Image 1 (cartoon, rainbow, N blue to C red):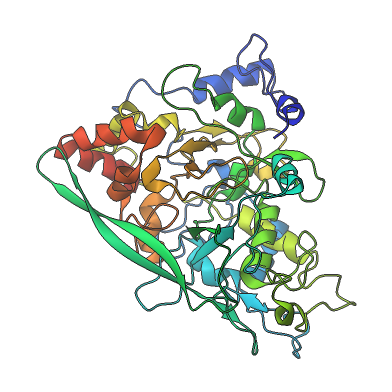
Image 2 (cartoon, rainbow, N blue to C red):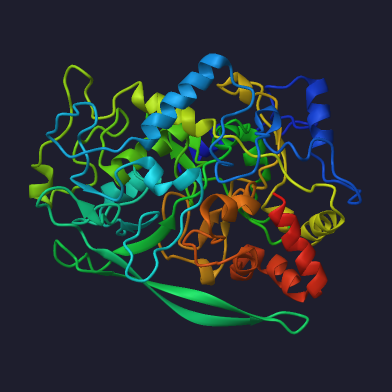
Length: 497
């Protein structure tokens, strides 16, 4: 991003505690500094540690719907809006023309007919099984910038990547009518053995991705591909409510403190205003708001136009003329797009208010021991445990809340093992946003699996740790060197989140 924009967003560096938190009084800043400080005593849980999402935390019984509850502090009217948004999130879209005037416009190329089909139970996706078409995993596509105009658009964040000329920004495995599908994702795994202290050997699976049955001819020879499983959706509104200064203050792109951690801010533009904003959502933090993330998914995954992404043909490119020529679902008396406002506002409200479940076993001795090891191994350098959200958050329920997401919201070099070789926005081909860890221990309950990382290659938390490299290499090696009972405690801690 240009220097002018970066300087505009630098937090104040004047003397004083949390001086960039202009939303807080001096008294508040002292309180926030104290409550977000690292613990010194790991023999007991910290105050309010079980309430991971602050007052919005869900205290419902743990079951398959654990990620589908609304923020506990909503008003009655907001509960209504959440349920309306949920209905739209589950809505099955159909191809045009149809008798269901407010539900047509699917595709023509698409990956799913409903948001819920990808975000099953609002949880984490997984890679497809052999001979299964991917339903909660997508393949992103792009090419390097080749013209001065493209390089300038990337530098100014008017574009975050250059789509593949024929196949667009995402491989679409479904289509309507006689429109050819774009192709099918294929994954091949090879074993990678890692020896742990104590005699255990873990066999990781290293994926290789290819595309078969291309429907529109060969891809560009310089095409870059990168897989993405759908992330869990809890706590998005709270992540949006973290003060930008708290994110920027943790960034150290030049590693000036010499700790080996050089997280950097991802910058994007607000699609409604064009103003620069911190990218917070997506595996490479390319989306600045929940609304922008939701709108992008409607366009790219379902082929439904929105006020933020008004093209009615979704991800169909100019090279796919038949696709662009198919009927669309815009109804003039309903709006200018297939999903006009207030559809997107309700969907975004639903996404913001999927509550973080209450933590379990915070006083358990093994969990507390694992928490201490998590800190000692340096995992908290990127997986920052807690924040107090901004007093100026757009939604009242998210203001001035102590939350525990375990992320710094920054981009980090994760090493060659996890590299996809595909830069997006400010993220290089080796960089990823630190994934929030809240809800980690409930993935199996909600989604029936424990797969992790951007492509689901890790079948459990230990495998995810062992894939860490780059800035996280020292922490990963510390886990490898732990005694077996220490690793068990560490994993028990992660299961409690």
